[in-house]
Image (cartoon, rainbow, N blue to C red):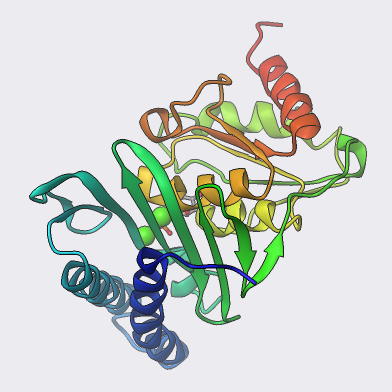
Length: 267
Ligand code: IPD
Ligand code: CA
Ligand code: CA
């Protein structure tokens, strides 16, 4: 069983409330697929609504904390040491296409350090949570990163940077090398869930470039509290600043790091 701090209870309650709207709206997406306007505007509205619920609930419970949100950007708080980092809907493309693989992601930063993280898939009702020093949990069951030590037996998750964004061009070279070394590659479409799956040992290791802080803040502490390693793509700690991430157990983290480096060496 997990022992929540009051802050985690606040995060769980806010996520569950926002999830109810996303569940309803996701149910509507199928009907909208056939409408002339298409569901894109509808999904943007669903996204904004979810963020509003999270903002209201968290502000009520913790007045003064600041926010960094995908839609609303930065909201300065009077309490300068605490900040929520929020993606109300991670996996928008999946949502838009009626694929039930998306999440709400909430990270809590204290004095520049992530101290709590929550990633919730409202469709599978899987709640991944972690707090510093307390371990990581999936629906109250303790989770740990996978124990596999050979890349050849591992499932590797990744994300493809959008066209025109840094990392897009170099991605094929990386994939080309990685796919020859591993048991399988997955591109699930929600970075927050990718990290949660690494924490739960479902994915053995994961890398992606060009992410935003709200994609990874919660997932980073999930993986670390599940016994895993998380760094940026250069092996440093600047995930939130560089947008690069590499996560897995110690052995696979190191091995995948070596393969990725080769992709950027001139031939
Ligand atoms: C996206 C997802 C996706 C990742 C993209 C992100 P969004 O977030 O996390 O897996 O590959 O880079 O932008 O737009 O669905 O919130
Ligand atoms: Ca989003
Ligand atoms: Ca996102």
